[in-house]
Length: 396
Image 1 (tube, rainbow, N blue to C red):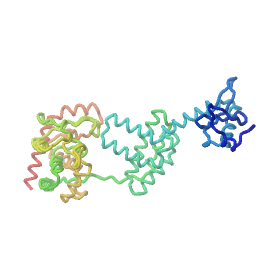
Image 2: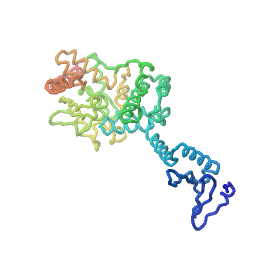
Image 3: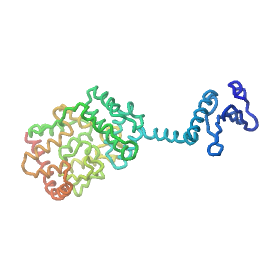
């Protein structure tokens, strides 16, 4: 006799587990604790088997019968409903693990373990946060170019063209990783560059006129803000490094005896160790910092905590405080100042200047050759440059 909703509701637990039977193999198991489970009994290849259909009351009588009928259709087609359920469960689990967000996070973790710079990892996580609302939960193998493009266009519409370009480039790397690891077959980001507005190329503002450089150096000497910020501003013109490399400098990287600062590959844009020869002036500035270093491993710790390096905007904010607008001078501009005036001096080989700026040579053999042959020239150039800066400070 078929079950009814009333009979199921009124069924009470007993001392031992017992069953209530419906029709066509569907039945219910009632436990002494009061639990009620649906089961479907079927025979396949001469063996009796059971399929878990659900738990009452989450799965009611009507739904349990529908699930039973679906299982019977699979049996009629020669498919084991138990095995089919397991395959679907595995597929669902894989889909959850293979969403764009999951694969992107795995990719970022991999790059982090490879030693990618902290600031670069932070930017990757930020780009993922921008893509997540639109495609983050989708299986990465199902994402179509038009879906990704819609997400990029939404950001582009705000006028942030460069951000949209970076989002596309990040997505392309994630899709390539998914292809390599067998989670996707195509890269929908590959050809979307042409569909985006190309951002205007901007150059880091820099002062390159000698008289103006002298005025800038005097302004830095008169800076009345935080002591650590002032030391970083004073050192920046002497060492040619990128602002991120300067901010993340650690005392363990400074060799005062050899007068050299060795920046590990993980902190460099080109992922190659970079040695910076230190002039007498640079050493003197660093020793001033060492005298007040406190407990931080960083040469220039953050203003609020010595556990982190100086923030990305500190030096630019200090330049604004000195009266220099973003169109006149930036922290990155110290590199352009050095590059321009060193080349104009005619005293130094262009290759030595490029090595000092840590610009990568496309020829690996040539690059290795340069690292060795230009070191002595770079040491002399570093001292000449610091002496020249002193001259500009006092001459104009």
